[in-house]
Length: 166
Image 1 (tube, rainbow, N blue to C red):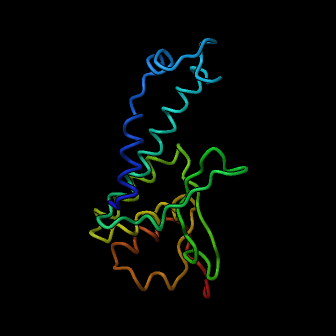
Image 2: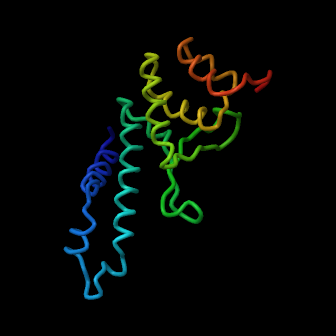
């Protein structure tokens, strides 16, 4: 795991089992909150941190990190945080593209990495397999040249065969 990812994971891990009551008691202001933060906000924060940790752990399965596959935005409609898989040029040539990793997608994300590992393929493919499963779409044909038969079968199961030139 890279140093920056490891530091981020350590910070998030400290908050993973955050007890909202203890947090509010320790940091309460005169109005009973943490500068306007409510119990619900703290509970939500705990859920968000658990989600972030599961995503980071899934991506950290790859020995050399596959962090170039993990993207995020935290502005505008993406706020407070949206995590995504980079799938640029995977489904279509010359595209900047990504697939959102929603909290409801965590089991699917982890399963994609587990299935790639079971196929004895490079775990780097786990994020791409997740994207293909979420889209219900196979990658473009030239991508298959980099796969062995077991890995290709996982991607074939993601959607219908694509036409020529796709």
